Amino acid sequence: MQNFHYFEILLYVFPILEIILINKYFRPYLRYKQIIQLTVADVVLPFLFVGIHLLSVYSLTFSLLPHFLLAACVVGLLQTLYFDKRRKVHQPKRFYRYFIKILFLMALLFYYMLVLLRIYFLIRG
Image 1 (cartoon, rainbow, N blue to C red):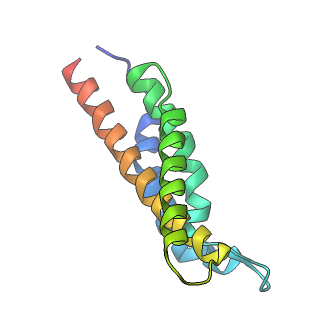
Image 2: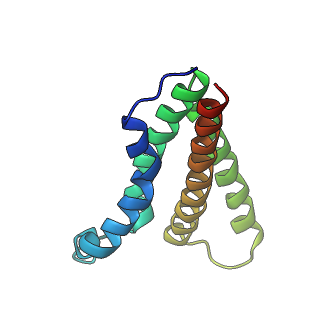
């Protein structure tokens, strides 16, 4: 049976808790004048990367983060091709905004797939 750490419970609920706390209390602080305007996804994404690394090491003894980042690069390339095929004016800010949204959804789904995999390995033994 694999070892269970109480730290893992925090890993399981931390992204959802972080999203709720940032939306409720820290949203006004995500803006600096009109120069920098962050979204919740911009803030949560680095924590998801660290969580993906930790959960994959706990579950599989190696990190899946490089594989995830490679998939993110492929998504970025596909998105670049999509924006290039459109005949409208290319706006880097719009590209960045869509890329972060897609990456955030991918990371959140991948993160919770790793959580389910870890729980399965703990139950199976």
